[in-house]
Length: 291
Image (cartoon, rainbow, N blue to C red):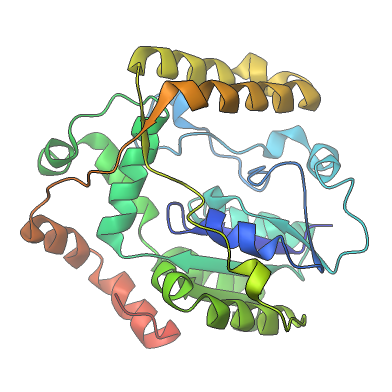
């Protein structure tokens, strides 16, 4: 039974943290990092609504489907799910609690502007047709509102604390994970009440996600639509896993690495960060996190 959830936030280092934690002998993982089971919301691919998550939840597949993902995990103190949609769906805390009230929750946060920038490039990589980043920001593109909603850290964290108790919710930042990885891991292991003395093998991972963009936008967009279609979602799990492997191999050819960051003014960056003053004050005052 899953009892450890990295609930968010998207584009804040959840994959890097997941890749570190899964190396611990007491933590087991399933065949999917983000099964998104504890969410009933529909995704953008279904609704074409720019205010929606890219891919919807999978609660309708049932608990047997969910637990089949972790069928091979044995003799582990924790079984981990890292679905970031759980920070966006307000029903997720209660759904997780109904499944297992003893679940431990982890959040990792990031400077708002950087999170939004990273989310933009992630969706460009998956074939979403968006304008140049500066134009995207200045024009207040409809998708920007979604990015802002995902960046509202306070409400989801408080909701989880209200459901699970503060003793079962741990919050850290991407800056801390980059600058003091051993300290963050030690804090998390203390939070989980598991032991570790040798941190070297946890600290050899580089960034888990590298910024890339499609060479052929239409082709990438078409392939993603097929992968996220209703037919694909209803296919047997082994077919879905095979399809994902094929897509990863195609991406090796289809995606090109991009290193240039957008030339965005400090005024725009500050303007975005200032929109999240309440969230940043909350992180500072309650979790000692500063950006």
